Each structure stands twice: as C-alpha cells, then as structure tokens.
Amino acid sequence: MKLKEMQSCAADTLDYFIAAMPDVPFGVDDIHIEFTTKSKIVERFKALCSEYAPDRPINEHHEFALEHNNFGNAIIGRGKSAVLLKTDYTIDEQDLRRIVFHELTHIYCGKTEMDDEHFIDVFGSGHTPDLDPEDKTYDGYVSAGYFVWSEFIAEYTAISKTIAQEHGFADIADNVIGLLCEIVIGNPGSKYIFAMMSAYILTCADARDILPEINTEGFIIPDNSQDGMAAVTALQSCLLHLHEHMQTQNPWKITEDFIASLGEKYLIFLMMNSIYLGAI
Image 1 (tube, one colour):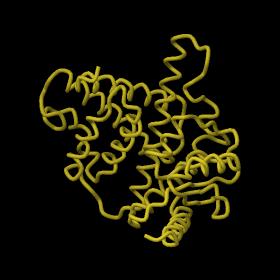
Image 2 (cartoon, rainbow, N blue to C red; image 1 turned 180 degrees about the vertical axis):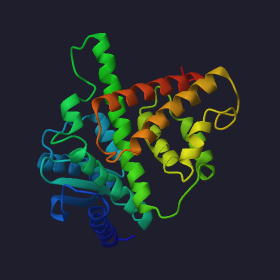
Image 3 (cartoon, rainbow, N blue to C red; image 1 turned 60 degrees about the vertical axis):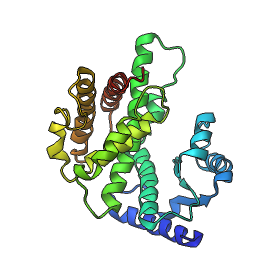
C-alpha cells in the first residue's frame, strides 16, 4: 500500500469505528492519526504525548517497544487523542484496519472503562513506591491484570469487528501452542503474547464449547504430566474469567476486583507454564 492508501484506510476505519461501537465518546475531529517511519517513531511519539497526554511517562522500555515491536500506538488524551502508526508499505488492508481498530479501542476503553476516570489513573501503574510486601503483591496483580486486559479487549474487539470470516479453534491450535511456549518468566513480552493468544481463542466460533475441554489430557499439552496439567488448568481459569466478563452488557466497563483477579490468575498461569517449560 502507498502512504495515501494507508491514510485513507485509517480514516475509513475511524469512520467505521464510530458507526460500529456504541456511545463512542469522540468524533472524527477528536482523533489525530499519523504515520511515521521507524527511525522517527520515538521522536513523534514523544511529540504527540507532549501535545495530547503531557502527563504520560515514557521510559526506555516504551522506547524499545516503539522501535522494535509496536506497529500502532494509542495516545489517550483528556480531550483529543492520537494514533501513531509505523509506515509499512507491505501491509495489507485488512491487517491495517485491524491495527487501527485495535488502537482506537484503547482510546475508547480509556474513556469509558470507568465513569469519568481512566483506570490506571485511579489504581496506579504497578510501580507505586514504599509499599509493604502484601500491598506490593496486590499492586503487581492490578498492574499485570490491567495490561493483559487492555491488550486483550483491544484485539478481541478488532478481530470481531474487522475480520468477516469466522475461525474455529482447530484453525489456530498450532499457533496457540507456539505462543504458549513464549509465555514464560523472563520474557518481557509475555503479558502481550498472552493477551493476543487469549483474544484469538475467545473469538473462535466454538470458544464456548472448547473452553471446558482445554485442560483435558492431550487437548493442548501433549502429555498428562502434573506440571503440564497445572499449566493448562491455570490457563483455563484465565480464559473463563475473560469469557464471562465479555458476556456482560458493557464489557469495556471494568472494576478493581475484576482486574486484580485477572492479574492474579495470569501470574499463576505464568508461573505454572514456566515450571512446565523448564524456564525456572
């Protein structure tokens, strides 16, 4: 795709998003969408944050992700917001629409997940200083849960709204098994990979049917080892928690209890999966 085609596709996706999602709290003029090259993405991200979200911290981890991992980035402002995208002339239209929709969902959820508040502004980032051990553990649950949730719902919604062809679990099973092998302690991308994998599973047409079977011998883990079954049972607990919440009337609405519980369940799975894979 040429740059003008990408810009047109992104603009069309914004129009579609506003039409497809309920009670969208922004209009076309409230979202700035920009494409930039890999070499300039950190510079442009910082500039857009300064304009739209001046209180957003940017550390070395964010800069690394911008340069090496993230194709799209949402900058959620109190008023107007922005989406920054890497220029990629090889991307196809469907992938670009999904990515733009994903980033717009981040903005949508940030503005609607709590009444007049952004969850992370209220409950912190997981790096609150001077906590006692019990509070620090809970802070970690909230931080992990919010990261997993925000990436999960953005991808779940983007898949559901932009990909017309349904998929079943059999279509993605090999991909899921490959992703499971990457979700281990020590991999800084584990939360993101877990969120994406969960979105792929729960957007399956047969998700409701396969969820009770995931911890069955041989369904995902080829053996019935104690460690392997503990890992898939912990995975099942995470997926059921997410699936139940997605059945609510307004699934983008979240509570502290839901996020903390998700974070705890995810971290248990991360530990069990790491033990099974011999990563610790």
